[in-house]
Length: 196
Image (cartoon, rainbow, N blue to C red; front, side):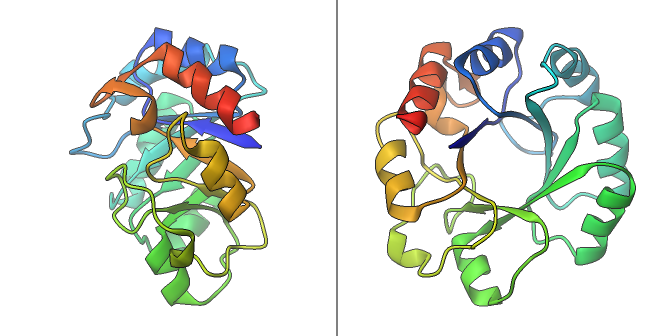
């Protein structure tokens, strides 16, 4: 089970995710997010992440030139676009040498009725709300690599992963003690539950 811990902003939270065995750590560069981090502040955090752990920059409805500038400044290896960006944005990201993760809501994925070439992160109908969705909302999950996100916690991740059968899971608010404040103990519990 691939595990991504997102919305990290401190040395303690990055170290907790890495030490717990997370496969990827995410840094949010989307304006307006309670988890926003500046690229200059993220760069030293990214630098301390071992090569075996994927580093992801999360962006939402931002100009593609800004996305690429911030991703380079932070030093992340993967760009996650989370706002129904056009296909040419994903091509630009790939051409710039970054790996890609396309985030869509369960509703958007189902309505689109097509296969995307990128790895997918499928979020709840209201992305970022921390509210999980019912398996009925995703009648036909992707056959390729995809991450389940939206309302996952240490207490429900095993059950929801079993229900949906994703390649991996993504968590942010579910391992926080307050909005935007990660709890190292919850991070460790989440990774253990996801893998258990």
